Length: 106
Image (tube, rainbow, N blue to C red):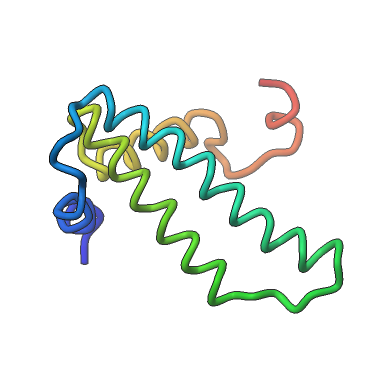
């Protein structure tokens, strides 16, 4: 499955009663919420001595992907374009690969 296929399939389950502004608000707020759920799983692993619940973390990553697709949809942009733009930004920032100095002095 391609990134854009995922976005198209995910948006089949989008609430059709929402307008683009509401879709944007829901997408961004839900990205924050789902990211919080993901970090809570990692917190339990790192700080509380639990086993890492990979299955649950993968499920949360899927939710994050859905809300990322929703947010991009609200902006009328394909996820592939979002991802490609990010790679171009990183190539400019780190043309030779990650560099600690450059990460601290941007």
